[in-house]
Image (tube, rainbow, N blue to C red; front, side, top):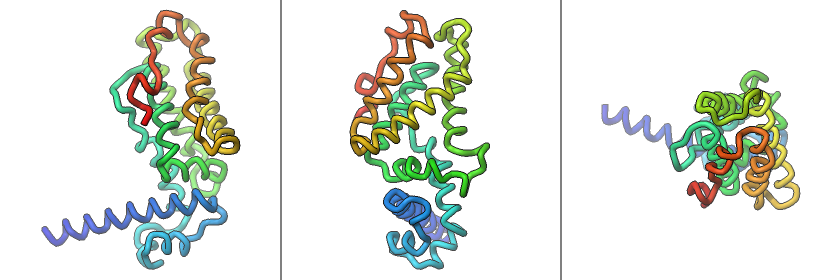
Length: 209
């Protein structure tokens, strides 16, 4: 049993090293410019070791993209609108330094090569935001008649666009401010003034590093 545990731990470490190496390579070269050989070299592993864990670069890219939400965990528990804000701002701040999140952002436009449309990152994040907005409706945090699905889609699109423009214009350094700005513009249409006043943002929530 002890030998098996050691082997499993070693395999988990190798898999994690591969994902990080792949993230760095995808982040630098994009999906088209990345190769399994490059990833293996970056990880300090043989091609055989890579193929033992992942059959192709498509599988590695899919792992990186689909795992994105699991990496974004707000530092404080929250519900409804506050959780939606905390999640998007945690993502924005972590994206500044986390190579796996950065790779996911770089791979957004190439997802059709390795992720079904029904499972792509837009659908993943929209599902998370939709649950938050539906929870907010139950908590009576939203204005009457608000279309939760439409706003979930809008927030995901706003964050995606903010990431792309921030990358082009500031190397993402002001991404958190852009995401917060999007919320400040949209919240008056989403929630009554009394609810909006109670909501907190990055630094107030301990999200900012």
